[in-house]
Image 1 (cartoon, one colour):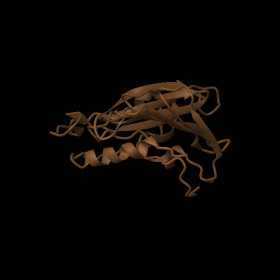
Image 2 (cartoon, one colour):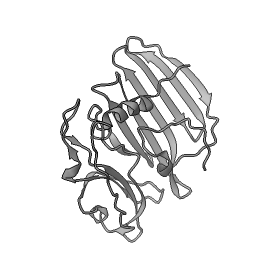
Image 3 (cartoon, one colour):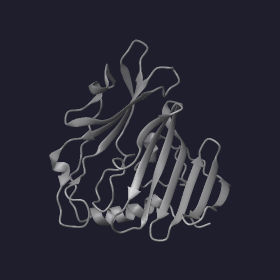
Image 4 (tube, one colour):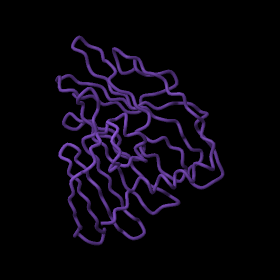
Length: 243
């Protein structure tokens, strides 16, 4: 079955557009190892864009999930091309901190690659225009939304579900859905990395009947929050094993 994965297609559009702009480089700060409040993890020049609490490591204490965004005016870029101008390319960081038994929090992970930086004016902001992050039954879910106002008819989303195990946030689920706005064609890919099951679906907005195919994931690779990299460029069926 032909399956048009959404993110590589939009990444091509992103790269082509980004070549027309000069996006400033970013030096990402190292967050404190411990803090008594969420604000204690906040670096200078950044703000808390989203904050969640919930148990992520099974100890029945409410842990912290923070989405931090830089506030540097140099990252707001004006241009004369297609799409959004000025373009706010201020990057984001995802921070996760576990609650301690005596209070306070210990940093468990920080990541600045999963939530793609907004560098292409013809694409929507993958985080601002989507559902963002959530805590679902002890797992962390991050969803990126994709929409192009030029260069592609495809729109959709990619969701990553992580669970804390073996000292890392392991990717246990991946869901990618896309819609071709010109034809109404729909496609989705759903992977359960725990059961190794893969579900492919194709259909149309004009029909209630979808074509569904199941497979078993053959790649031995195990992904974590750190190894996924850029969520918009993630190749979920990558066979390379670098466990």
